[in-house]
Image (tube, rainbow, N blue to C red; front, side):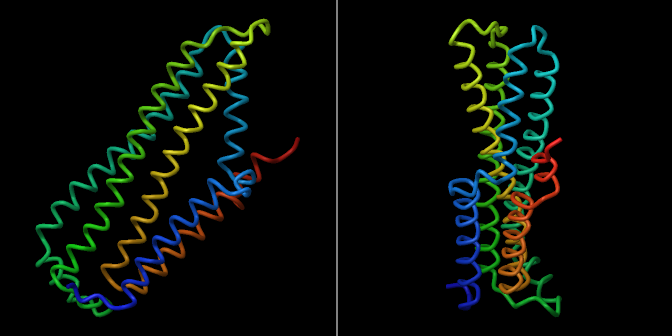
Length: 227
C-alpha cells in the first residue's frame, strides 16, 4: 500500500465533496437561476429568436465557429496533458527524487507518485470527453441554425425550432462548463504532489473561485444590468 496518511485520504475526499457538491449546487439546485450560466441561457434564447428573423445567417455561423474554436482548443490541450501524464507514469523515480529535494514537499514513494498521476489522468480524460462531446454538440447546433426557417410568425414549427436550438446549445454549454471545472480541479490536484494540506487548500480555493465567478462576478452584474 502507498504511504498515504489520513490527511491524504481527507484531501481526496474533500476534492470529491467539493467537485460533486459544487456541481450539484451550481447546475441542479434552485440557485442556478441566479448564475452566470442561467443568464447566458436567456441571451442564447434571445440570440435564437433574432437569428430566426434574419435571412442571412453568416453572423450566426461565425459566432458558432468561434465557440467551436474555444472548445476545440481545450479538448486538444486536455489530450496533450493526458499524453504528458502517461509519460510521467514512466518517470516515477526521477519525479520522486526531484520532489525529495524540495524542503516543503512531503516524502513520497513510487507507487504513491503513480497513484497521484493516475488521479490527474482520470480528471483530464474526463475533461477531454466533456469537451469532445461539447464540440460535437456545437456542430449539431450549427446545423440547427442552418436548418432554421425565416420567421414569419405564422407556423408553430418556428417556436419549436427556437426551443430545440436553445436546448441543444445549452447542453453543449453545460458540457463545456463541466470540462472547464475539471481543468480547475485538475490544477488543484497538482498540489497533492507537494503536500495533502496544499491539495485540500487548493480545492477550497477552486470552489470559492468558481462560486464567485458563477454567482457574484462583474460579468454577471453586467448581464443583469437594466438600462
